[in-house]
Image 1 (cartoon, rainbow, N blue to C red):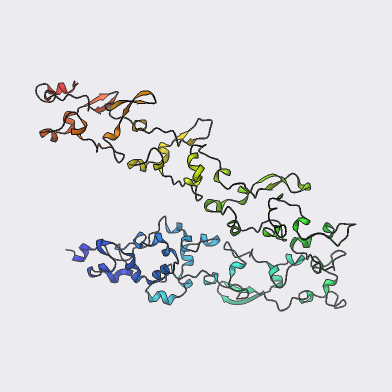
Image 2: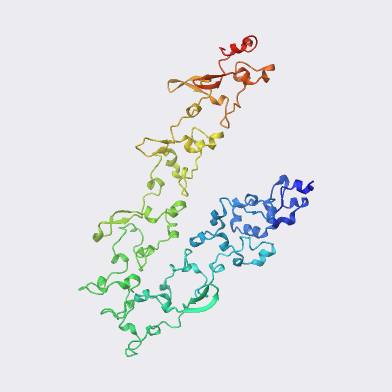
Length: 554
């Protein structure tokens, strides 16, 4: 015979809750009505309670406040107590406040959530939290999980230079922000030519690093051999430039001493491209990019300040790619949300029209200004005006969202056919089937659908309950199914023999099975139950030859 607690308990507790085993401890977790109170959970799980109070992490979100939605117990000592809706591998990490980007999105959970990455281990151990199982305790800075490959030379903000997709190259690093700006041929030199590798074997998988802080770099001779052995002094730039040791006639000219220092791509431009032969070298306009360059966008950004407008999206290092960021786009009249975040720029800003100045009259320019940001200004209306009465006020967002076109949120109660009972379980296309001929695109018909039961459902009574009704000036036969049935199920829940028939059931008739009075017969190739016309005379069912008479009731 089982002990009393085994008869009452739904199962053995998990090993972490094993100390609560026994009937006297039930109320440690359960409240009245066998309900699990989140407050009682947080009385023990203090670390989570502190994060919730600080509005941090996944558990601070309102939809994750009910512990039993994801955690259940009484399934055994080694039962996995975390329920991952859709599977752990499909968990939306952005809900924790730390979205996974780049290479992080391809990592398995435990590649990051490891004991050695946890900060403040002592605090968690005080609360008896397993460091091997917990998902708490990680910091968000890069160096909490990754080794400092630069050994503290450039600070701790790795994302100032790197991206999360991969460590190399460092696309955000701009040598122009360093004390030694790269120009000319220096732009082609490999990093390790100047920044020599240093081996320190500090980390198991990282034996060394590049030394970024050079002892001297102000003079050319700090890195380059003086080919002239000091005969012409130490100022190499008097005759040479970073464009090449053997440049042209103006190799020794320092354009940086003018009001227009040459940076980026300007350094590789031939002098005569700007300073044309036969024209003065002084007095050239250069305050705005358009003083030299054609307006590729054909005046679409003319409303902005002319000075500095090009620099908002481009740099002297190259016209493409644009430096216009996603954060900048979020400050425009059309912030990107949902599926729009995954759309390539050119899908919306497609080339259209001619532009680019007199020498580029046939060039297709990209469109950046729009008269409207409504959905239908970019997307074709698949409903061909059927739902205009909704979209004219609420737009396409009345039913759809930018997350996915196929996610539909529509209140059918706004129509003439509110969904109730089993109708709520039906797929939309079960009623809204594709309409149109073979020569046009198939699309679901949303309006003009019939509303009567008989328009969609077969009349299993073969017209026994039809009544003549005048509709649109015509007499039509209609079966009012709602007199007996509801949308919840087909059983005749509403039928009352005493109110809806001419033969009230009294006395012994109340206990007679329906089939004893309502025979089965075949009509139009279908076997049905006969409900009418039936005779109400006693002799029709009782007495000699009653069975024969039942088949001929009037």
